[in-house]
Image (cartoon, rainbow, N blue to C red):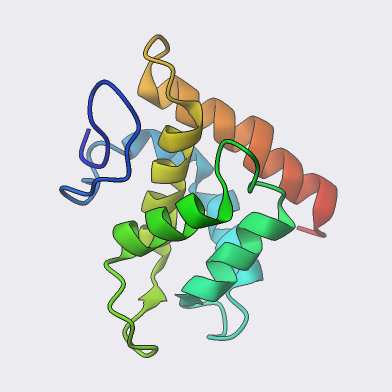
Amino acid sequence: LPLFDANSPTLALSQPQSSQNSSFLKPHLPILKKIFKHFASEQGGDMMHIAEFLYMLHKLNLIDTKLNEFDAANLTISATYYTGTARFDLIKFTEFCETLVHIAEFKTFDGVCGREVRIQNWLKNEVFAAVERLTAL
């Protein structure tokens, strides 16, 4: 698993998520794209500023005791290779998906359930449920 130690979810970044490892996201791409476009308003829906991503996490109530603001910012910065330059620090859709996968891994790691099952359940029960409840998507 590229972002996390096999035994615990840490914030140590090693390598980006490969597209092979996230093929289980394919059925969810249409709704993820709608969410991305909805919250990526500053760049016309094509790119998302990191602040918009963090706002999305707040708006969808995904910031909690398990994933606080500091951890959310660190995960986002690590997954998107943040440099501090506004014109370069825009999140593409693929980076958006990768960052959500990393956040899901961080929030759901239990050492028992499989990664794909945990991430899909988190997307369905936390992200998509919040989107349905809190937005007009």
